[in-house]
Image (cartoon, rainbow, N blue to C red; front, side, top):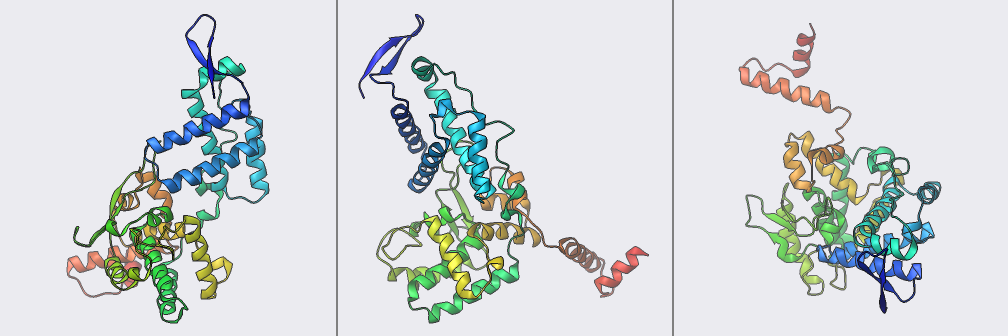
Length: 362
């Protein structure tokens, strides 16, 4: 688009378009916003997903971003709630718009003031900012228990021998074991390459998660994740016996064309597998629930909270604490372990823990 110079009240010149069509200008701003993601190192999958989300948000708002009012945000978030969309989805809409509006304030405020006479004020406030996913979402439910996860993995293992296609069934087993034992996000697992598996790094081997989720407007945050609970053995088997049956490519968990699995494909695949397992919808869990199960089950086993934070790649321990949902008997189990340990250290009689608890009450 050709541009001309406009003088604003005798101040510095501002480049202006030959036509001030607001939708065309907003399109240019969106392109610049997406270019900033690339400059910060966001993965192609993240850019594609967030670009689609931003387009849907702007379409729903129905007016240029600088003209959006708090009432417009109320309307869009309210319509999403009426449609039954999860709190996390509503929050995503609000957050992507808030980020775009912040970009306009930093990069385009002078131009918008000059051409459209609008002084930018973000319409997202404490009254319409969607609450965190943990506040009223199904994700607030406890993650699957160790027993439920174990049953699912046994089903996947048994299915390898009976599935019509051996390679995808075996890949599914290795993929979901990785999501659980390494606590990965779906997208992090989908972007793993074969070269990211390092069996000789540390006592258990480690995965190099190169595209960890960004935080506080940073780019991807890479981290090293140990392959715990026998995950190293699962991945050795997968690389030796399974990966070669897929087309040659760098991707670790490849689809049947050799490309990366989309996170939506992983979610839908998990749901389909639980249907085949014969589970009712109320017993289903998501890929993200496996990540929360990783945090919870490790915490219940006594793993330090900071270690779990590092495993999951959280910015703060407070984020990790939201993931930890101990079982209903967590307090009792912790008490029994503590009493048993104390009796063992004292070298006293091998008295049942329940009896020791009764003595404590007396």
